[in-house]
Length: 343
Ligand SMILES: [Zn+2]
Image (cartoon, rainbow, N blue to C red; front, top):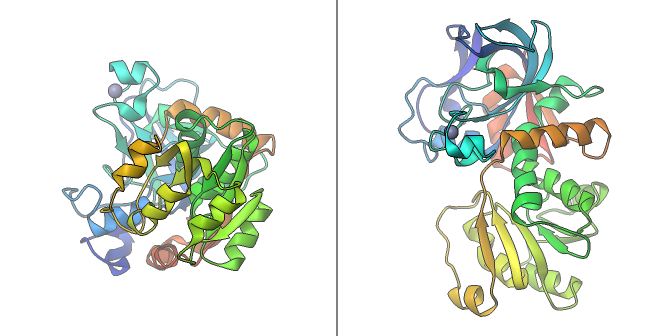
């Protein structure tokens, strides 16, 4: 098969388009003919060797995809060749206490497609049958591929960790990112008043189109004061953040007394400074978040089909141009998802 393979750790140039053995499905697995694969920041961390630095090379990155079931392994029921599916990138043992409690993203064997095993920048991928779900009707393959990782991540942050409800002022950092595009919509759906930040007027305009009530340009050093002003001096009750070291102090200062901050990444850097006095004196909760239970994809897909949530595809490139896609993502030049079309 054709695939984009990472032959070393480093810049986008380590991604090479070429031939790779087509994987065979084992028991309880399916092979999906990929039609579209979406990029995530995770792919950049994997490429650089920050995420899973011991990963064996060569490696195929990519967590998200949509496609068509092309072969089913022994024991698979309920899936047929030809089914149009989206791939759920969270992989877990399926039989431990955490998995059986529906907390599979806390499984000791938890893995993410493309981070721990070969991913979706390819014509074919093999995944457990539990990791495919029906593609929502009315969505293109590119739109469907743009859903799983970011909407799962945003769902757990907004719904499960922050418990957003009507009356909450919800700060969503970096509105142009895939996770934030999802978080703005989910927070609105659960009744929050959304304040979105971004670094350009164009991205702020797009955030408003998605439903953000207020927008703040965080290129300004005092951006957090604007968040406080917009909330009557109180700050945001709930915060969705994955921006990392560069903005962390501002995030803390933009949060209301007793507020909750969910963190699902650190795009601008992994090492920041924590102002302890703010945390204990103002009783802030800082909640780490990674992915979501696989089960959360079901309500997400239903809400997408009902038109209440929608993926935002910012740029579509052919699979061969994965390296260019990484550059676009790293330079934050796209609002919404960068998606690779696979022929
Ligand atoms: Zn498990």
